[in-house]
Length: 280
Length: 356
Picture 1 (cartoon, chains in turn blue, cyan):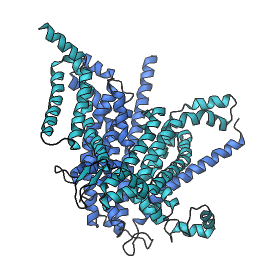
Picture 2: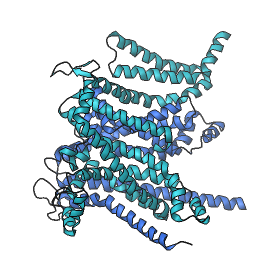
Picture 3: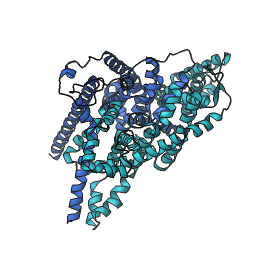
């Protein structure tokens, strides 16, 4: 039934996809490889010789390490705020039918469809010439929460779209108070979606450069530090820290995937058991 | 007595209107305060309105009974996030437009007079017209390239991934767990003049072909328009690939099989069944790629030369280096409006659901 030509086409497409993966990994391979380089001079851009030194002293570049911690601090605070605000919006949007929900949907998409440079510069014009907040940690956190909120709201909403809200009614019919219903039924069920959105929001915050650039004042985050240093020197520690972040993210991703797979396997097993019982 | 009960019932039944209205009023108050639109005693008036507004809704929720509470609940959940966005997204846009129409009081002043100074816009277009053109041109080419690379990749993962689907998808996303800047700097090293890639190309004789295609310039790969577009393509590829993957994944494979059973060729089945069903993904990806690409300045800075600067570079330079806020704001406003127009057209046609 299958003709030969399509078979070759199939093969070509797979090869193309393989090449696509190679393209995606080219700079990554480069970054990890050069974390083992022993550079001559200030720029870690030409291969000299292999060394473990950089990995043994990953925090040797003090300003870089300080900037990384700053970024983690900012990401932790902003993600915490944004995850709460965003999840509340998501619950409101998927749990209730209400007047104005269409407009709010559109409004939520706006920050995501505005170029970062516009978000960053416009927020800076708001902070310019007022005496309440100085440019620094606070303005960076405000900026990050601003773009994270929409992101969290839309992600959580997508994750809980199929949620069966009648479960809440069932709990209340069985005598649970609204608060208890939320803590015991709703929250545990939507928590995975919230955590996933929170993780992604954290990653967005750590990696944000353009918006932060406009609102940082004297504070140096990890991307800002790299940007500032890139003209003067590129120490191999940048590659080491980047590789560490990469490996850590991969580990988290793998754990989440395996946990998800195990859960769906469990679900299938339960479903099977239930079917067998039912047949009897 | 009965009159008040009736009135209370009426308010309770219309609690959703009250909730929505209160949220909008509170947002307007915050925007007015944030942009310093009001001054002097008016500030206290607005603050008072804001407090009364927030307290009023709480009182209604407390005394209006379960029906009113049910109607008010969504607005209560929305309010913290919405007010944050009002103060730190809407108000900034307002103040950006305001500054774009202002002039500096004097050369070294930090104060700006709002006086409908449209000359900022004419200056933005006359001085930075080519940067606008390049931004939209490079972003458009990069978007097309991400479709050409991302679609087949998403297709293979969605339809041929089998049980490795999740792993393949993970592989596609993993590169983007490294910092955006570091990735871009890595490309600048890979494409460097005496780097491995340039030498390999010249050794194989591809150099001349690339030169003819205007991808290379005088034996250089770095600091060319092609390098900038390549960087944009690379950095924004996942924004194209993931929405396409999501829309392909939703397609029921039985539809394709049915087309085959009805003697459709594989190509025809793809064109008539798979492609139309995946178009929403392509359009969502197009927006999510084009928008950040058009506003980007990192790729042009690390991979380009002074003749490949995009509008993002100019905004950044005028804003942070020259402190020329009015012209920088005018450029940002033009960028925002042109992209908002595109987005509105898009949402009119395809809805907002696929963007999430």
